[in-house]
Image (cartoon, rainbow, N blue to C red; front, side):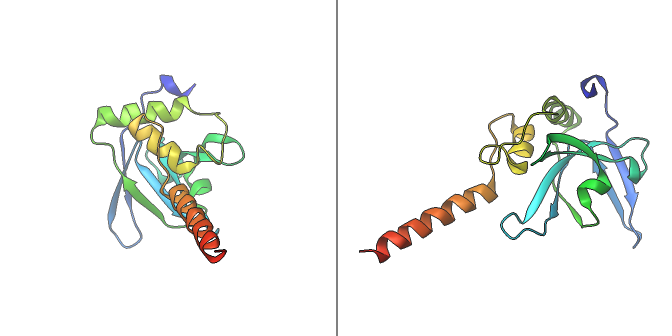
Length: 152
């Protein structure tokens, strides 16, 4: 079980151009997708193993199995990974990590809990928000308003 593990906190990578990148437990990351209606996918750094990049794991909400932990390469799939937000402290990182870990195995529900809902829930402890889903809803409302106005 994951929740008994005290995770290491930071990993430093050297990029090919020589720059150093810090990654830490519970940092929210994002990759672009090839789907036009779902432009990106989000997850959290879950583990850094022995400190080598191939030991990094990501926890995310996946459509098929639900919340799961996967290797970095499976999450990134060769795409650029962007860091979106960092915990404010080590204590905050541990709380976020624990929320994420406690959700492992929970099912994916496309209208209530997408990857954005999941990462936001882990950060806030609340119901979570999804900017992508909000755009979809606003777009659908705009189409309905347009159709109603055109019909008059």
